[in-house]
Length: 138
Image (cartoon, rainbow, N blue to C red; front, side, top):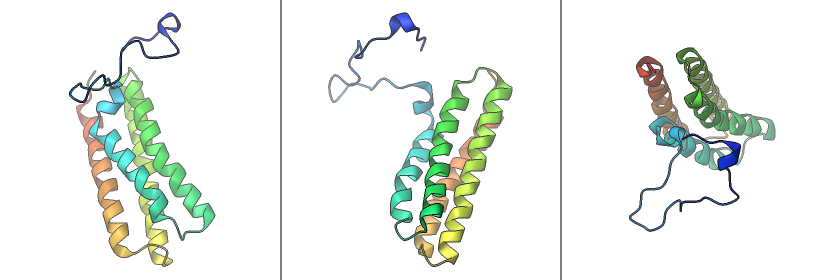
């Protein structure tokens, strides 16, 4: 997608989804399965942190958002080195989330089953990020 200030409008010039059968217009990062799973994980966080200390809740919310945001930013980079750097940072945020879940679990603020379910999402994200770093050659 080539966007310039001259192309910008207040409203989309083409409908995002004109009917139920139409394919929505997606940005490059939205096509990545890793991005979609990162969004799913970020949506889980508020329910996982209901009883957590505010500082830890905020940290987990920031780190979970960082996965998706950094992945999107990295996908927009045009050099392999830049993309790998951002994908590595997104992976680091996923690992930070995993550690926060461990803290919530050992302090009694998160059930083991919920921690396991959330960590499965994080594992999928990390696996896909590793795959992106290995496969991206452009």
